[in-house]
Image (cartoon, rainbow, N blue to C red; front, side):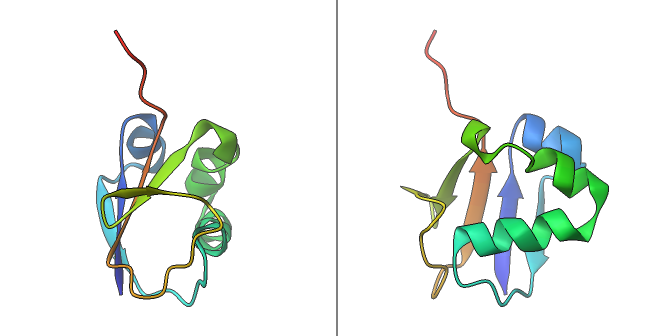
Amino acid sequence: MVDVLYFAWVRERIGLPKEQLDTSAATVMDLVEELRAREERYAVAFSDISALKVALDQELADFNAPLEGVREVAFFPPMTGG
């Protein structure tokens, strides 16, 4: 079981701030593919992953990062200065 958190426009498109998922995904990208296949709103939110960042257990990670042992995955747009 993993907690998946959505921030900013990702949250708006999916309609949830977070959810708990039972996943067999080996990597972040595998999880993204599982999410895309769930419903249209996920497919839209994850249509362009170049516009997203991911953190695993509150540490920035790559979409190829393994999920083994991870308790929390967070998806969010890149932060801008200002």
